[in-house]
Length: 336
Image (cartoon, rainbow, N blue to C red; front, side, top):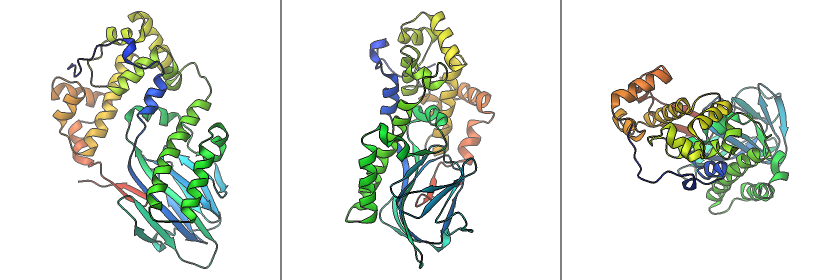
């Protein structure tokens, strides 16, 4: 394996608070937002997508429906975060049928923000909605652990910033001024990050699993380092050194908490990142292999197929990685 860094390896190189280290890499990419004024009756379906979504209700009426929880009413000032982008529907009332997407007038306010209007005679719902990808692959295991829906109002009491942020977003959404679209998108970035961190801090202290492992003073230090630099030539000896433990104790502890060995975890992490890089279409298979520490394209291809059951060339040819977002309401991947 190639070692792309000459930095010395010791526990002091990695912050003791590994969870903060991972959360520090929080980035949102491919973000699109829509400021929406929709007249009752309206209903819009959101298909399952591998993107984080959120909806902020500045002024109702607004309801959200998911398969697991059915219809739930959202009040003025409510925000819902859907970390895994599960299929759901928004509507002005539960009994509204059909899809109002095509009757919306969309005006681009910038490269990633739209103004969405649906005329009518009923009550006006003012929403701010968004779709985004997480730019930090280190957060993928954390996102997978999160509940399908997180309500901002449910965690606002645990974070003094969430309440004022929601109030400020409501003012910007209902009283738009010059630059309001940019201000709203910046606040949405911050709000999503705060909600994720708040959920982490309020989660139960489990003794196993990824969240427990990243909080562990020994294993967490190693996880943060592997996620931060997955292409490094990590050996069991080096990982144990970072953990400040012997190889046998570290290997036993890692496996007990995560249910797999460190080498297997690292291999899966690399292949997950490889799929993202290949899907973006900007790097060749050889370039991805080199970035992830493989000495040859052939060895990388073998490892990739063994773990993902598909060749890297197929992934690169069939997924361009371009995301076509229609004001955060419709996200589809288009082949090259």
